[in-house]
Amino acid sequence: MSFPTFLDTCALYGAAISDLLLELAEEGCYRPLWSPHVLDELEKNLSLRVGADKAHDRVEAMRSAFPDALVQGYDNLIPSMSNDPKDRHVLAAAVRANAEVIVTFNLRDFPDDSLTAYDIHAIHPDDFLLDQLDLFPEVTIQAVERIAEGYEAPPMTTGEYLVKLVAAGVPRFVAALENSITN
Image (cartoon, rainbow, N blue to C red):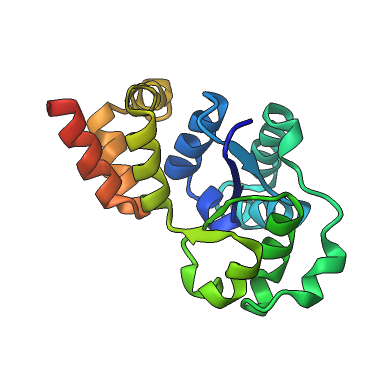
């Protein structure tokens, strides 16, 4: 069984990081988890940027590609969570799914004292991707290259994709990846 990882909306929102997270999940590096709350929030936020149809299509593609990622039956846990109220649904779903980590840019919404009882850690996408690179170097490098090659509108080189990843908030991962590629 792959490493159970709950993906917060903010980690799935930007296409550059989302594409890489999902590609690594597809490769079996970890098991992605999300909730209806997360997917609804993602679709709502994406629709403001790319339009309702494209946002809906992206979320439906995620559902289809990872049918076992959807976590249900956590609503009764939400009131007992002690993290930031707006993200209690995330922790409740992660607890229900027995996730080991929550990948989020909003680390302050998941203080350690709200996580320790559940043996869950909140981790920044930069750190999570560094772990993936450390554990699965070849797979991670190939995933980055495949994603870059797959962009058509506009076409993108691997270097251009790495620039997007830095801008999206994972500069340490990109630096380590570039170091891995050159060595």
